[in-house]
Image (cartoon, rainbow, N blue to C red; front, side, top):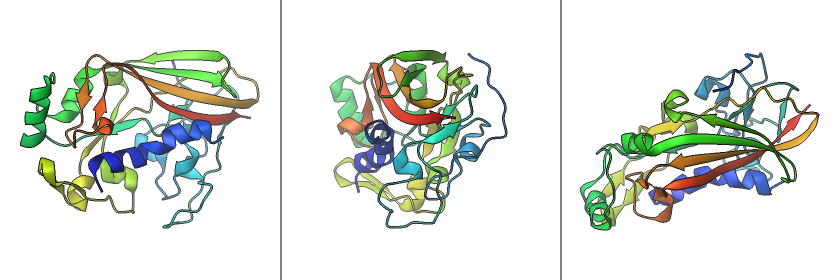
Length: 244
């Protein structure tokens, strides 16, 4: 499987959740959000507020081939007045730019900020914006801005995949040949930004998250569209949740 295919398979749940259906945080004892493959997103990102995740991650309409029996009901329920955090705002990269990838990027005039794709990404991620909308999305009810450098967690890709196997990443044309174990050790930057408290009446809402890039970024895993984040604002995810 190509690097692009794996990355967008993981990220697909971010967009599907919408269509399938510095602010102080309140520390709470809340039910944890657990993926269907049994990864506790509260523990993964070290947050103590309700974690919002897409249906494809926590309660898929069609049982997955490898169903470990874990479930969090979708959409995630949030107590009135609580803060929330996204469970699927992340970006993973190669550890370095392979020679063939670097050469191709240089020919494109790519603005390298580091030989490390993770450092390149962080140096170009200028801000994160979270919006909370009603559902269906007709009105923006709240907006929150975050400094990425003050709101990130560094993990390895295998930590998100839990007990499941991270697929190998192979692109012979670019000299990329990462075994399952090597792919699982790739750096993954997560952004469980805490938005709130939310003074919302009971009902269904949508969390939208945008990344604002100061320049184009490549993850070092390929040259397809899915390996790039463009300069400017990118709508990264939209996920429903319910206020009780």
